[in-house]
Image 1 (cartoon, one colour):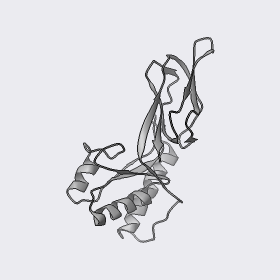
Image 2 (tube, one colour):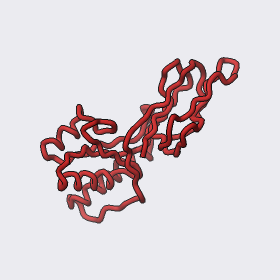
Image 3 (tube, rainbow, N blue to C red):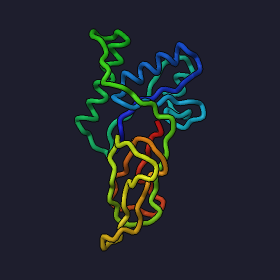
Image 4 (cartoon, rainbow, N blue to C red):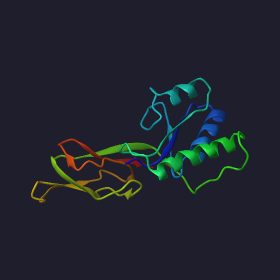
Length: 178
């Protein structure tokens, strides 16, 4: 399960970066990712959006959805995002609309299971996390808790692996530090 976001790879060129950030803000309903060359957030240096910005082409990277499903709400994020960008660029009539305040993801961290077992998730995408918050329980086949998995820091749950069984070291939640 993935929290929708849009990202732009910062270039250090004010005019390009201002336009790229504007497109990301218009595309995403809540979370934007402004990537730096250090590569802690997408778009990463090995991707086409990053390469395009290095050639002076304003380009954003956007994701929504997950689990290999096609949900109406996820499709709506992309339709609304593309429509907003096209209106901003005056490709189509109308004024772009902003859904509300945006947060900027500065870094992402992954919380992993340290024990194998059955997983009981305690968070959903978009949940705000605090350091030490319970994000899941790992249980044995008898339903007994063998591990309480906690967030290593504060942020917003941006990716939740929805598998019901985990092995030692499997990812459970990736959160955005904002």
